[in-house]
Length: 92
Image (cartoon, rainbow, N blue to C red):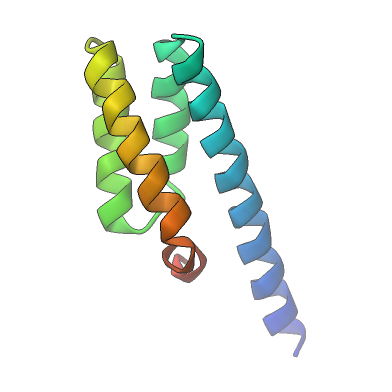
């Protein structure tokens, strides 16, 4: 029972962190801060399942030199993560 509570607590903490990073990425795109977007996407990649993690890594890569493509890819990533919350919860 105790281990289940710890697992649930970790999932909730991870979900909160993902939500904060999503908001940070939205802010970075909205303010044209692609250096911040690169950092946010890289951090987000470590919290996501493989399919979404690859997209987050791609956003981080694009943010280094192609701001328009990075913003478009961020929009796709953020939408996918927000619609795939169960995938975030399954990551260990």
